[in-house]
Image 1 (cartoon, rainbow, N blue to C red):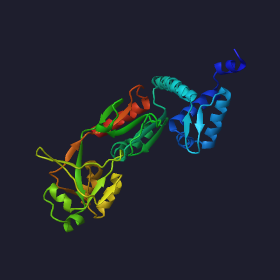
Image 2: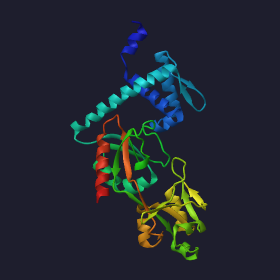
Image 3: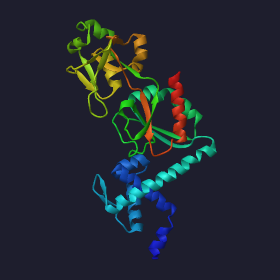
Length: 308
């Protein structure tokens, strides 16, 4: 065996660290995003990768100003590292049952609405109960690959969870309603049925997939899908509601997002007989890994909160 072969047979702590850095760079597709994920500088990652390639005597990546592409050797190594690091992570996670308490890093990707309605009510209690958990919540309406993004779990509407994931429903079905400000309705054209919406300023919502969210209405077994010229299209519920609250028009959202405003009278439900129910929020995670104890504890707390 050559000197180089004897060296590589003994994997050092530096090797493990740099291999994980290579894995992060490869999954992120570049140094900048990987640096953000790992909370280090891009130059530090570039230096670590060059050092690893020098020790291995193999080029793993082809670099451009903005992106990296893997060489054949890089693809082969990444495939084996994904298996190896997954085993290591599961092994470390398995130690939680001996500690008696969750600990470690927990990263979750959630929709804006889920962040407000599902996570916000329990976060303070969770952080207080599990101080050894480093919780990171990324609020993002754009659909992302949670595995590729390095997340432990995601929260989306039930109908939009990838099929290869384990999905756990959170609470009951969601009621969707149309709302407007009282001032807008006073000056607006008559509104006796959904067909009258074409005469109103309607604020549409664009999903994280890029598609427009359809206003699906239902009354006494009859379905109606709103098809109008949108006065405005927003990519988040919060902005749409702020515009509507200022008196601009009508928007469509989950009842939970506006419950307090409906109670206070700042907003009014439009055509309350015409609403619809959709799938509840679902927490989902990769099917090939066990449920981390920190995530299990958060899931339990969320379900208790929604159950009440």
